[in-house]
Image (cartoon, rainbow, N blue to C red; front, side, top):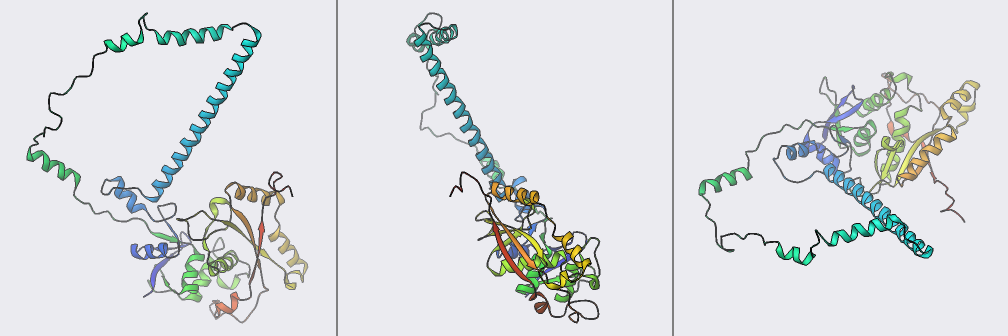
Length: 367
C-alpha cells in the first residue's frame, strides 16, 4: 500500500498527518521535518516529558544539554587559562622583586593576609579543631528498620504511576516539494491527495503543481520555463539521492542542500550544495535578448561566493557548486492541460556538473 499525504497550497509543501507514515518516512530516509520541531518530529515526546507522563529526554533536549556542557567546558577552560596567566605573572613579579633587593607593599599585604588565615584570634589551628564538638549522632541504631504505615506506602506508589492522559499529536511531517516528488516519482511509495477533493494527484499533475508554486505568485503550466526554481533544484536533489546521499535542506547555512553520508542523527553534513543554472547550449546565446536574460540570471558577485565559502569553512563543511546545464525549450511533450507526459524523457535532458570549492588559508596550504 502507498503512503498518503496531501498538498498544502498555503505553505507550498506536502503534509503527512498520519503518525505511522511520518515515522516511516523519517526513519527510512530522513524525509521531511516536524512542523513543531527543528528536524525529527518529536513534539509529542517533548509534551509527554513536559507533563511528566514519561521519563527521559528527546533528541532536541540531548542536543541542548550537550551544547550547554560544551559551553561550560569552554568557560572553565578559559578560566583556568586566565588563572595560569595570573600565577605566571605573580611568579615573574616575585622574581623581579627579589632581584631588586626590596619587597613591594602589595606583596607584604598578601603575605600578611595569608598568615592571618593560619591564626584566628591568636589561637593555634590545632586547638580550634580540638574544641569543635562532633556532630550529634542519631539515637536509632544503624541497621534498625523503620516502620512505615501501609497508607503512606500506597500513596507513594500511586504518585509514581500517575493516571495516563491522552495527548493529541498536533505535529505533522512537512515535506518539501523536491522530497515529495522524489517519493512519488523516484521511489513510487507516496500518494499525494488534493486537500479539497481528497482525490490522488497524478504524477504529471503533481510535477506541474510543484513547478507552478516555485514562482511567486504561482504561474500556470504553459508559462513554465525550462529553468524554473523547482526544476533546477529537483534535478540536483534527484542526482544526489540516486548516488546514495541523504539530502536535507540547507537554508540554515545559506545553501540549497546539505549532504549526509548516513543521516542527521548519526553525523554532521559533510557537504553543502549550491545549485547554479548553466546556459551552455547554443540556444541561450542565439539572440541579444536571451544573452541579456542569461547574464542577469547567472550574475553572482565574488563577495557573495567568498561569504558562503567562509561560512561553510567555519562549520567544517565542503562547498559544492552544482551546475545544472539547462536545455532549450522543447515542444510536443505536454498534453492539453500543459502537464508533461513523459517526465523521464523530460528530465533526461538536464545534466549536473559538480565543482568542489575549498577556502585557501596560508597556514594550511603552504605547499
